Length: 249
Length: 249
DNA sequence: AAAAAATATCAAATATTTTCAAAAAGAGCT
DNA sequence: AGCTCTTTTTGAAAATATTTGATATTTTTT
Image (cartoon, rainbow over all chains, first blue to last red; front, side, top):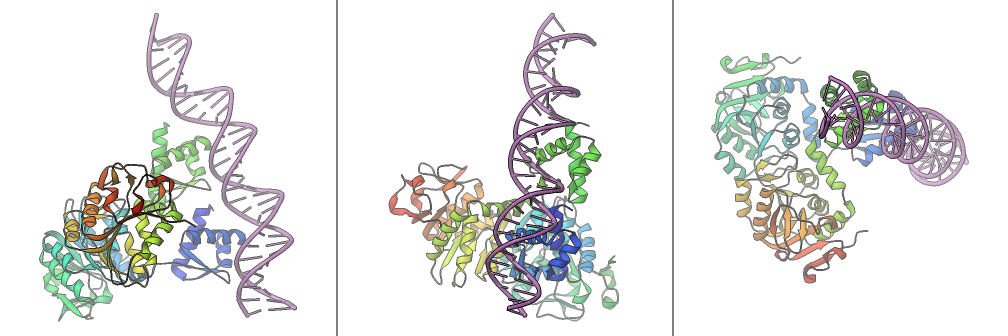
């Protein structure tokens, strides 16, 4: 196994485990402890890993990204299924808005090669958007700590002057009675405007969001063209004409 | 098989695989390892591939981030010295602008705990700013591929309505004759406005920037309050009242 | 103080770079 | 086309450089 692959393996282990021990790495890679140590030192110099005394290492993630990356892992399959379907709706040349959530982030990789322009207020999407060389407009404004979302009068003004072909928006909570809600009032405000300025509106939700209410309501269930989710049972009372149930594999 | 086709084959392999081994390529192309190595070197020079020890090569993933991180490493000590000094100029409660460069990025960690608001058009600064919980306003606009800098009418409009206590701006090139220049016309435009809207203007430069000109000039040497750099020799002809030479340790 | 872990050192094993001559491919000419 | 001359590409061998495992030494933990 070449060094690069070995180091990747270590990072992979740390993605699922939080801490790995030298023995463990050694066993999986079949090299001497000396080499494992050297690998870890290399990764540490790259800022990817922190070496702990006691023969272990843990992943270094920036505080802010942590919560985002952790959310990316939650219900990954559902989010993947929903966003994969959502991406098929995007046609060449379209001008679309992506909300700042993790489900929306999953969409990005599927847009690769499509000639679209993405507008978003989710600063964490930037890496992924650049990676796939997608034309991007990031809204400007105050950056919300922890979630790196851009809000404020300036962001509002910008979206107010845009007309989207489609928007894809997630929510923290969704109920038939109260509609879609989120935990931040500024995010709610932006969502509200985006929905108004979009020809077609798509709501995305993994099953955990359904049935709960968050603080700030920004839309009614009926404000969308399609509501994309995976769990049929949970949306039984919803308007079935607007529902799209996708299978997670 | 002609060289061109061979190299394409390597890229194809990397499309699906992430890593290819020398043996693998050699087997498929039926040439000597020496030639495979040369092919890889060519591809590397084209920026299409990364050569790894072990004889494998991997597709370069996020060109953008990579180049930023690599630039962060260049002249690290000088940048650190310059930005460390720059940060001492920032007082509690101030409203400052940071340019999108790597030198400016180094400033951020030194702002930890200071009650300042940072405005920037460098999207790559976000992680660092969130990490140290610094109040941040990110300009909105088109995201320039590769460098993740925000530009365009919207960004311009935003900075035009702001009044900064201080701004810290780097450049790609600096000469006494032509002043400060950068490689992107939009970045130059933003810089120009920021300089106008700042009570105090600070230019930052590691020694490699001095003596070279880039495409778009955005300021004269005299447009600043202080010009902070490390290399005394290179700035001998500059107005000494404005110069601050810091030691790298 | 004993045990465990981390660091340092060194020689062997691998990989990479350099060098050089042969082969292949082009370019110009008759 | 056939022939020379030049340039480029290639493979093999030698020279360097890097990676690795083993062992000894120092540091840290218990």
